[in-house]
Structure formats: C-alpha cells, structure tokens
Length: 198
Image 1 (cartoon, helix red, strand yellow):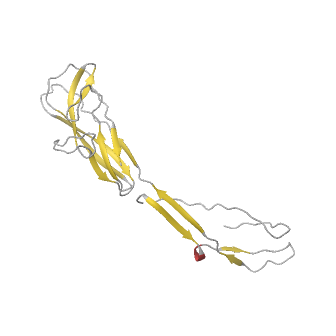
Image 2: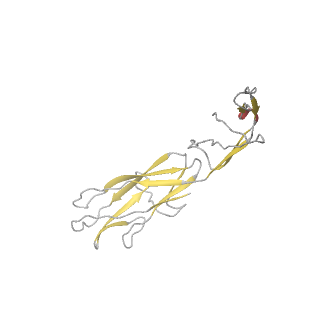
Image 3: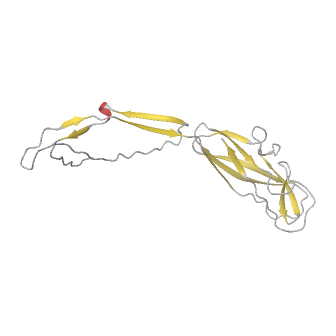
C-alpha cells in the first residue's frame, strides 16, 4: 500500500488506512482467538521532502503494533426435506419412506436433533397422525433403518445426537406407515417441527 501525506506547518499530519481481513476456517472450534502484529510482522517505510525542489530523504521505517481478535460462538443450522409416502391403496402392509435432515454446527459442538409429534390430535412420537379433515393415517418416524428406535423430541431420551464438524452433516429419517384400516381416499398430511439443541 502506498500513499502521500501532506504535513502541516509544524511538520505533523495524520491519515487513516483500512486493513481488510477475512475469516475462512469453517473448522474453528468455539472460543476466543487473538493474534499480535509487532516487530518484523509489520513495517511502515516512509520518505519525506520539504518542497518540490528539495531532495527526498533516505527511507525510514517504523514498526507499529496492533492486535487482531475474534470470538467463535457455538452455532447450528438445520434443514429438512419432505417425506412422501406416495399414492397408497390398501394399508395392509408396511409402507416405508425416508427423508433427510441436514445439520451444520461449529466444530466440536455437541448437538441433539428432535422431532415433535406433529399436528395430529392425540399423536405421540410412536404414533403420529397424517390428517385429512377428521380422518387420519397413523405413521411413525425412526432413527434407524430397522425402524426400531423412534425419533422424538426429548433430549437424552429419543433425540439423535452428534458432534459438529463445521460442515454439513446428514441424518436420515426413516418413516413407516404400518398396516391399519384404510381411510377414505384423500390427501393426508402432517407437519413435523425439527429442533436442534446445542
């Protein structure tokens, strides 16, 4: 960086120049970080003259010091895709489907992902309800492909857990519509709220 500085009659002057910095380490763990720039880390060279007809002086150097600091806070984001069981006829056998939850948490941050019971009246984590008016279809959401571990919303009991890596981490939601009395034809839906705790 090079610039000119005009001095006043007493031989002094000042100016301000911005130093631009950026952070690009997505794997940084939460905490406070500092760096010190001094000595040979930073050098300002300058020359001066006292008029257009006067010779430029020999270069001189100063080495100012400054600190840079940043605080990385634990944080998480979460997104989810829809689950569609498709067009069904008789509900006389298991119907399975999956969807994906994508979480991104700061590196080394423990997290839990929970799924609520949905909007169906009287629904539980083991028997959620898709509805159309007053009609319902029972279904369940699981953490494993064998569909034996239900996915609920109580941390430490039925949520999925992980440790952040500073990048996207995908978790599969395993859904199942079990055999049941087939309700009247209609489009049945439910909305699940995904909560990430960290």
